[in-house]
Length: 306
Image 1 (cartoon, rainbow, N blue to C red):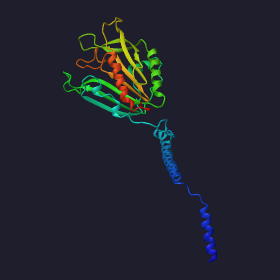
Image 2 (image 1 turned 60 degrees about the vertical axis):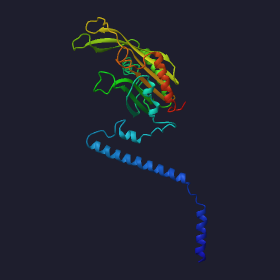
Image 3 (image 1 turned 90 degrees about the vertical axis):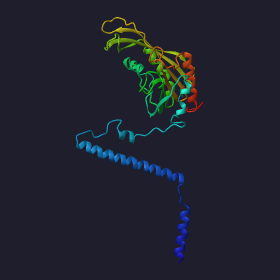
Image 4 (image 1 turned 180 degrees about the vertical axis):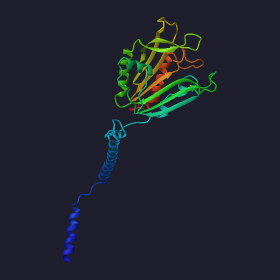
């Protein structure tokens, strides 16, 4: 009996010396074990896929960028701060000073920042493209007016389009530096477009010179550019003769607040003075004020906030 008590006392004493993990440590070990299990499962599936591919005469390893590469590669942690872009960060129809009663919107993840598709074509043609930065989150909208005469059965006439992008740390300021480099290198860039030069239904290839320039800078937010594209020197490709045709200008607003960048395209590009019946902001003063309103709307959603 005494031996049993001695054994029990010894066990009690030994147990007091055991170090039990803290609850947080136990949870951390469980997470690591879950990750190892998931990776092992993915690796097992990958091994089976590779064997099947070899049996069929295909590659033994998955191509770069496949689902296995994305699954097994480490994921960059989400930076602290605000993530998704709320609808309130975009312009409202009341901000335009122009009628707009239809709103189309969309959201996205890892979307490329689109400033001007034609400018992108010039950059690629002249070897200036450094690749479009990818946003973390994006939200876009198109504001329309369906009360314009002659538009029955249509969703409406575009008054304004806007994209807001949340960029990774440091990418938003670099976007403006790259924009200056590309616009400088694209002065006088030419492309060929079909154009109606007569009353018949046929089109004629016409060569057009394009130039982009900053009409105003730093009028809103942390950075801002009023980017204007002009088209000139129209030439009939077939005859080499100049074409006497006045083309519209396109103006875009780029405004940065923290890690947010917005690209705003008012409807001044659809005609010389915009679409008939649509009174969107057109003067430089109106567009600069619109940029300031957009910056105020982005302030609370930016990292850091204003």
